[in-house]
Amino acid sequence: MNPFHYPSLAELCRFIVFSALALLHCESLVAQNTQSGEKLFDANCAGCHNFKQDGIGPQLGGLKNAVDRAYLVEFIKSPKAQIDARVARAMDKAKKFGTVMPDFKHLTSAELDDLVAYILEKPAPVVRASSGKVALENPIISSIPQASIALNLQKVMQFPFTNKTQPRTRINKMGVHPITKETMVADLQGKIYILTANNQPDVFFDATEHFKNFINTPGLATGLGSFAFHPEYARNGLVYTTHTEPKNSATADFSYADSIPVRLQWVVNEWTVKDSRSRVLTGKPRELLRVNVVDQIHGMQEIAFNPYATPKSPDYGLLYIGIGDGGAVEKGYPFIARNKNNIWGKVLRIDPTGRTSKNGQYGIPRSNPFVGKDGLDEVYAAGFRNPNRISWTKDGKMLVSNIGQRQIESVYLVKPGKNYGWPDREGTFLIDSTANVNSVYSLPKNDARYGYSYPAAQFDHDEGNAIMGGFEYTGKQIPALAGKYIFGEIVRGRVFYINLNEIREGSQATIHEFPLKLDGQPTTLKELSKASKVDFRIGQDAAGELYLMTKSDGMMYKVVK
Image (cartoon, rainbow, N blue to C red):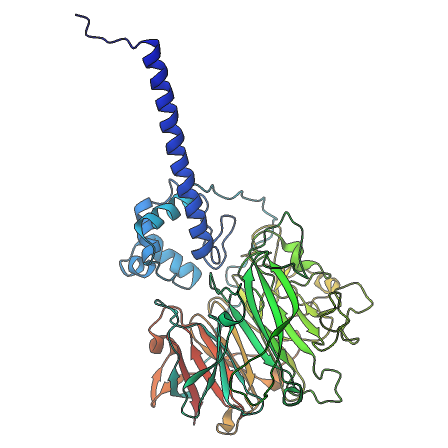
């Protein structure tokens, strides 16, 4: 008896067909897994990571055979646990990037498998040839000194939680109702709260009830961005809001080449309120403008009117809009922000009640610096990565805080028509946007020929990861704060000031850090929030008194005597 069985031709054909179908099935499963992983990456990771170069977090290309798969899964579930366990790679990344990634324990095992499969299939980025310049490892050597006076904090309230994990809330901006003088706070999830006399948060506005396409995912400043009341609100009832919608929700007024991806759209709306004293915003919105952005980061975080402009001032009733580069530079499209005829990476100034714009929905102030010249008519100033806050001082200075890439955080004394450098400068340093934008270099000897304007104050990432703009103190309760611009650092929750008399264009004022106290005891916002990322915001009430807010736990503190 022959121990070997030779298959017939029919059996061999069946085997080949079965094997091919099985292979196709396996390939299909892999494709499904990586496709699912890509969606998960876009929703949870893309704001901080890419596969080309470091961003808020490290680039993730080329990890296959370099990082253990099991470690990657555990790290995504809980980075802090890996750091607490003193895993070398986790500790190294935390030290390098100065912050800790939040936990993603809500992802299922299947989702983690898909996400990790997608990450591990990405190749290492192509290393560009060295430019020959030497990157600066510590751009600003001096440390920020402690102030001689401390800020005494008083707990005011805790906002309703809108997230199951940190940050528990997404409270983002404080404002004041122009008629009732009540304090108002916006949450990126879509609500604007108006606080009662007992500091209870009533809902003044809920974007989810008015915009069917409203989104506040995947986070990183997406959602309800900002709000502003027209200076003639008591007479005309006009309020302005900004929010995000998915790509292709409507035709954008500002777009770029079709070959470049669109992640989402930022929208500016005008509301006409029938009863200006109402504690609930009602009415229909009128869309002023819509902007495509490459990514969810560095969007439209600020709109504001100059509070010191009088009816006879050329600035009166003009709306300032801060719009970042939309992640274009980090994603490899620096020309989008660099182009003076583009909207990205700029501070805009428009007349919201006019109709002379290209889309006929707002006006172009004749005094804007590029009207009749080479440049976008709406632009007031250029060269910002993320102009996240705009404020004015009583003597007329316009201050813009700009969140940097990986090295420098800055405050600019902004003047019309000036270029503050991004993506070719970060603070007082050179950026090579054709190579790695995470590195900075000394300015070239012929720098003056480029005509850039430089910050009035700056700090590097030894001190903090992201600046949070603030205000000149105009209150009466704490005379020692008079003459100071008070701002801070988002991630670590540090509170700083510079003296107003030191603010000059291109000459960096000395930054001081306030020690903090609660109930007379020294503390920090990191200790109070018990969070690795504080997510600090600063606000000012109708009387000019200051408030500190922490998104991580939804707390609001007032600065008191």
